[in-house]
Length: 76
Length: 176
Image 1 (cartoon, each protein chain N blue to C red):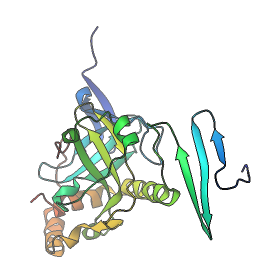
Image 2: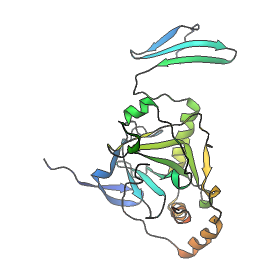
Image 3: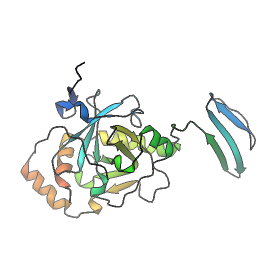
Image 4: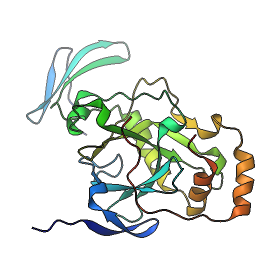
């Protein structure tokens, strides 16, 4: 991992079109500003990982459970 | 030039002919499977809120998804401007929303909806994108049985009835 030291107000460019700015540091919280292309989604890691996990769980069902769930729950 | 109308695809429900008009393009794949860009929706049963989001290229990649509004009429999704751009959204009525579904092995009565990573489909341009939600007032998981309590009863009936039939491919829920 590349490690850089920055002060509040200072920025880092990732390539030409992503700019990351450290806005402020307060205790354990660091406020970061991101300038990214307007079609680039940005995710918090914990949310991203949880969605990834849930996607994998949605795959791991047996045909039997799938059928049972289909019959168990109906549209109202 | 002749256009491809139908393609036979190996799915987790077996080989199916998929109407090319029912293919949804996911320019960013789905989270964890970023290299899969084309999916279709397979309907399991006519009156079921559940569908399979099936990769056109990977037979084993079929995720169980559901129309969340069957269970949670007031479910709300935030779509940021980057996401709107990817989805080519210019009218909010163009979208269909699906959520992934988890069934714990052998316990279909504990089926839950994953509300954190809804899959948004622009039903007009047939572009799809998974849009993780932050600061949501909804729980991360929503137990389907919280809505209904007849689960145990129905389960017994199913075990008696044996296996049902799976219907062919169908693109799901119309725009909300």
